[in-house]
Image 1: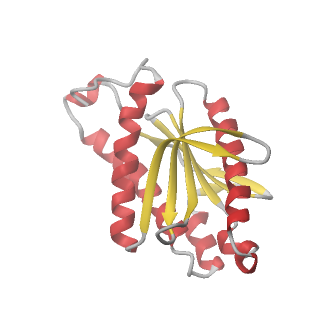
Image 2 (image 1 turned 30 degrees about the vertical axis):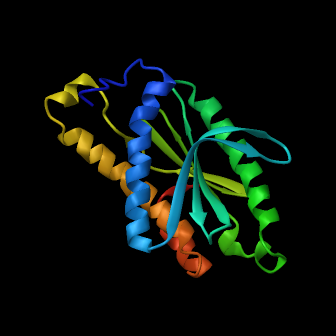
Length: 196
């Protein structure tokens, strides 16, 4: 924070300097907990049937040496959150179709594979989505990280905000890579993060 400065009024590129470390640290923790491979590609091109474009961050589960499966897409925005939500939803829809085409027919319609997570953030405010073909859910709580000059003197508020956001991200990643759990168990764990 001392090097980059406050996020207030900064452009999207600077905000990504705050977003990236939170995502990388969350992935690291989720990998340690689950013992599963998880990777992140910044500025990744997603090509789908109805839409294509570059996503700010694409998070994938490593299945084996050759195969990966998309589990989450993150969109960082400076101001226009409505556009960020719309862009993220379109990217999730395209990615869902791509994931479905990659799978074997025997598992293509299995409920445990039938959702993706989306994250829309300004670096300060974080929103979490769950995309299923029939419906989109959004986090029911506000997740805010204070990224202003005030926290330079007392970073307790910053640490609380980062811990809360990372807790959600780790939980979502953990949920998505542990596909051997029952769908009912997954629904119960994710219910606390989403509202209809």
